[in-house]
Image 1 (cartoon, rainbow, N blue to C red):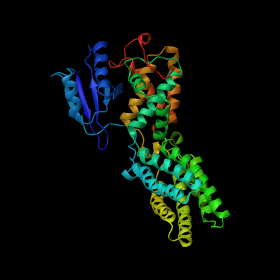
Image 2 (image 1 turned 60 degrees about the horizontal axis):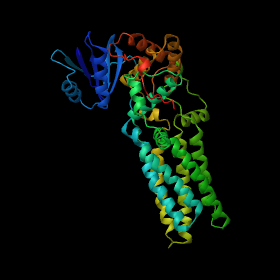
Image 3 (image 1 turned 45 degrees about the vertical axis):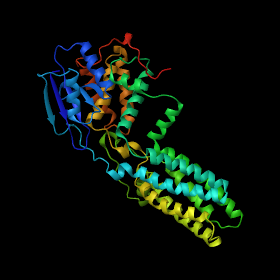
Length: 427
């Protein structure tokens, strides 16, 4: 290699940029990229500030990557190492979510889970099959949020990359075996159980709302049973209000922070009702959180009635635990985003360049007549993703630039497509 540049930005993962010698061979390129991939890092050829380099990510410290390259004999005394404090970007820096914004969904899950277990315990103690069913569904939903509620940027990039690989595979195009996208698709886990796990991890709020809505339906039946038995209407009102707010949060789509059409923002309405509706659309979890605070008061009312009727019974203690923890959980939920792209923030400049360059490396290896249609499909796909910054036109320009330079990038995949044996998602 001719030069190794290391970039470290505040709060951003480090990035290494490798510049190749002019006489580097295809075999040397394949060896270096294979070694980096085996190490568990990501390497993709990109064009940055007019230079064709190999962008490497996934390592933790600058020393880690320099030691690895030197040990493998990929760098010599002629290689130069520089460190830049910040990653350059042609777009304004987006405000990154705070710790509470990134973790509010998980915290909501933890507190909900405590209350959900209390609800399940109440159903078991009172031998109410509807409460057992509702508490069980609630517990599954709370557990999912507690496990998957925290945003994970690497998981987001992996998901976008895999979906993009599936899109390209639909065009019956083999992936060059030494390309980064091929490495991503080889490492992809398959199987029904793994697909379910990935779905829950990628859409934790939506998956939990399905479970909670079904659980609230069971609570309606539990409340109706108590009402028919002459034990008051509090349980019925609780179940009905809980079902309505969870169903609304489930079906209302969340606006993407990224996708303002060509940079034109909609002016806020002067109508207070419209403004309130728009406010809820920004974060549908507000419907769940604020609406559930109302249902919490109904649950507390039902608990008081149970205590007044049977002060020595154990069941009301579980419900009281649920009511208390639900209040904290619902405050957290009201702060949360249902859309993981909004919760985790946009891809930064290096991350978006990596995704675009992965596509460009495959596009440039495709037959010439398929390049333009494929580039258009990839552009539309990326523009539709909430995590990707920019409009369709802007993303198209960026992708076009990477494609145009990829044919001249010494780091690009060079193995003939006819010799590739790569898993592209087709059975």
